[in-house]
Image 1 (cartoon, rainbow, N blue to C red):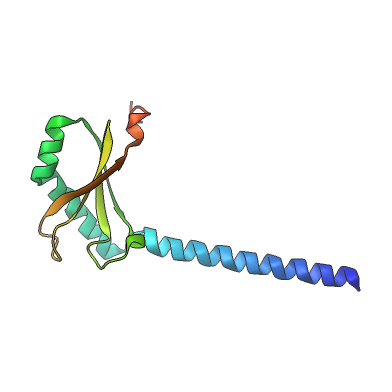
Image 2: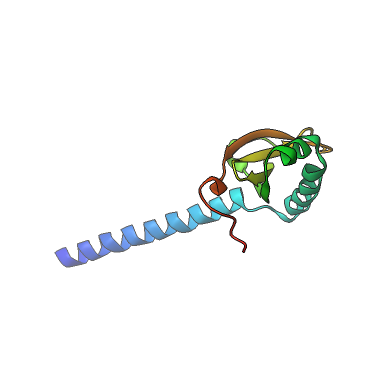
Length: 124
């Protein structure tokens, strides 16, 4: 009888843990991966980033290594303010965001650590 209770307890814990992990991965996927509409907007944002004055000033001062577009729904806000373009240089990564609701222009909204401070570019 005691073995059966232990088995049922372990089974319940296992099921609970699996439900939690699957639910967590589904929610995280919704918060990080862009939808089809967001992908189109991100593509346009990359082009607007390269054409922006902030980017041109940055390109004069530092070596641009990579540009990466992404979604950050953790910070809250509404579309398109959850979208960002990260311009990575050998010193920092600069974050570009939409300036207005229509995303007619983008601007440098901040900066963060760049892996290229410690690593070389990955392409030969």
